Image 1 (cartoon, helix red, strand yellow):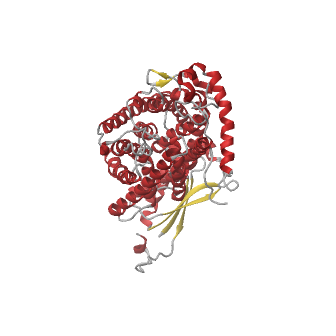
Image 2 (cartoon, chains in turn brown, blue):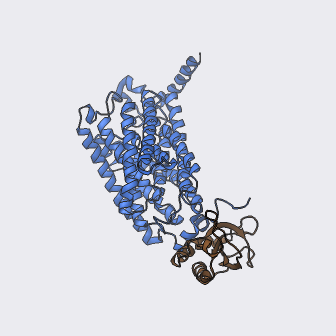
Image 3 (cartoon, rainbow over the protein chains, first blue to last red):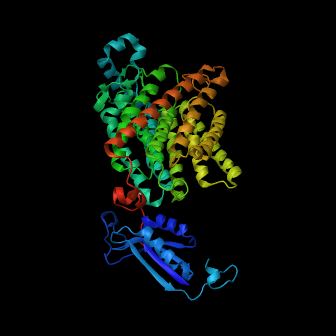
Length: 113
Length: 450
């Protein structure tokens, strides 16, 4: 099991979600976050509006998947979020040792989907 | 004692104006005789009430900004506020430069006012007996200005979240000049053909609401749907703001309708009462319909109903009784509800914030309802409606509705197409996704931290 974290431009969220749905990846947690990358908070003119210092608004996606779904998930995020401009974001893939569905008590791969 | 003091004050104001009238309009005074000479006296009560009403109506435009602003997505909040504020500034200037003259200036062929009063020439501190005989002409002009301001602002509801700001500014100026001003002249201007036909529109059902509502429909169709409409559009980003806006609209509407009596008397009192009653009846009706159809009464439904009730009572407010206002309010809860719930879905146009559904449909219902419930017992200067033995009035009202609908839809479409050809109406897809706040104004309404 892997834990995929994607940090993307807010305006790409709809497209990424659409592509995830196409690949039958429905479970996702989304949050609005602020942060900065190598560009130190300046991407394009309309995004240069600075909030809390030089931190820029981004959207964070968190998706827990079984191993077979890691590549489709990454493809969906990259495909939906890439514009070629600085500030498109990052994807982190982490090992996920355990997963528990609270309602049933199921564990592991069964609990993810 | 206070009363005596007021009387003395009034007298002091009357004398100089009477003198001006004698000097300036000697021939007219001679025709009218002694009684005519004292007629154009300024009444302090009337003047105070209409000044106050103008301020109340002014507050409706920022109120509308919050009503609409709360209903859009957070990335477009500022764009709606900016559009409302820009209209407030732009149309106010247009009005004093030439808009007022086009609307109320000396009649040209029953369709438009002449430019004789442009730059407020001749619009001074003496009363104009044709429009408001007991207050300075300038006070009447200011009161009407606030109507000219809020009317185009209502249309924003149809094109919110996707119109380019520069195109918006050009369109609004063209619309105010070529649609609002002539229609105001038809209905309210001396010599206007709908006024001569006897159409009743106390405070702007046709001029303001049908007019804005039909152009709103034009805008929804010409601009097209927002990306992701209808399934992927997020719900209103801040309903408390929308509630605040609706409350300010209701408050300001007392000036809109009761101020249209152009005097502080019984007629203003009647308009005040029926305005309140109709809004209440429509709010309850909409909430009940939501309850029956969707199992829960919603806040959004309640405030939409309230506004629809205010819209519908507008043309009727100087002609109907409080009990009639209940029926008009119930109709205002029903017909716009049907339009928003069924018609919009069936035709799949994206009237983003239901400017057509509420103001168009509500305005049409109000104008027709005026022909049903109007009574000379309420206003001897008005007319009797269907229920008081005068079915002809219903036809007169219907005619005024149809003429306004056709004109503002047709000219609305033409102006939008024109602006589109010259400078493109819509923002790019990319800008629409990011939101109008950042792309049109380089600002965000909310920060995430701090």
